[in-house]
Length: 334
Image (cartoon, rainbow, N blue to C red; front, side):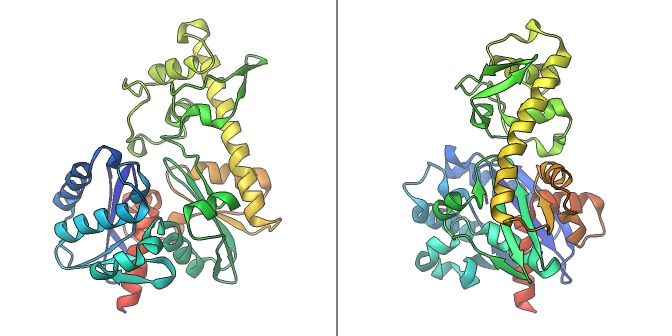
């Protein structure tokens, strides 16, 4: 459960993804949005499960007074809505029951990255795992099959570059920098929420429509023209003020800025290692671009995922923490 999406993965007894779903869920608007998202997922799951493994980041939204309060509220709702046994991923403590959530709230909070990294470590013993999502990006080094932890809390991980709040859908374009190259000159970037990175990647052609679930900055549509109109506002233009190709070039300039920021985190976290980059999330295309730029091998996380369906593999890569935590829970049962 994230702050903007609810993700779910149904695995068979061998760990193969049978069904993976993502539902938009703006949790900051109220718990009723999460309840509705859970109902939608349960209505679409083809087979009822008696065992549920849960990880979350939604506890950090400003609906809640603090993270422990958010963990408790989300856990209580999950306990109410799910039939059968529900366990919560508590990082180094493994899985805990609903009755143990309060005592482990700080370990449960935002532990999804660790579930993902632990899964990858089982498949690729030496790598830098990079999950670029809609809102943020995780960077986790793996050495000799062990996850190298740079702090567990969001605060610790943000200090070490293990967590960078930069994603490919919801991130405000103004967060990418202060100046951008446009038509041969640098322009100041408006400190206004006129556009998001989804506008950038619609124009570059990188963002798949099925991964593009968030609302636009102005509430308008998601066509290329509407995306260009929003990007133009970021540098004080109307979209009619330049040819369409100029806005596509502007999008590429914004992409380059985000790649530079994420590349800094890769360099910091890998400390000169030439190990593979393992990419996951809706923005794994940026991880592939960084690997090419840095002359490092790239592994698409979907190549580590079991499934008979190409479509389900794709969704498991986008919703990777959901798949990973389900896999770890299944492994524990065995």
